[in-house]
Length: 115
Length: 115
Image (cartoon, rainbow over the protein chains, first blue to last red):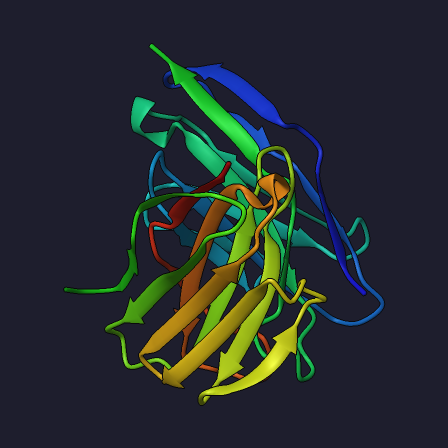
């Protein structure tokens, strides 16, 4: 079985500051890792995912995450945030194998960007 | 309509009522999912359908009954719910990769309140 821990439930930052949202996972098998974002009154949408290859993955809006197998982490970072990045961010893990899309989610981190 | 749509967006029901939630995807996907999102809890996967066949039932109480008549439509039939069932119910779809690498596309959710 898999589990995901997001270490911070809320992260307040000022605009143009850097941010890191932390995610740790546990699994007895190889995993695929995802970050989803949920803006107010909307469903979740994929931000980025790690499947294989380079351990650093990037999104189109400046976020990046690094898969660290030894530390079982997949932290999300952005060097300079905008007001529009205010949202709830979810880390998720898929066990691969024949998991048929069964994702295990963390509890979410609410990122609030202040002017 | 594009993406994943859900109706109704808001639903208030009594404990003795019977209602249904509807989800429709316009993405040509083969897998559909129901999730429950409660405050301060991780997203809970409820059901997974692949090619109209249920492949996951995550120990969901029988008062929730899913139906998938075709790959584009998914229903969640509700009866004799409890107040603790109040939550945001999210539908998602994906291509249906059995190895768990899929991106899931979420609808905006139905906000359910059980009185």
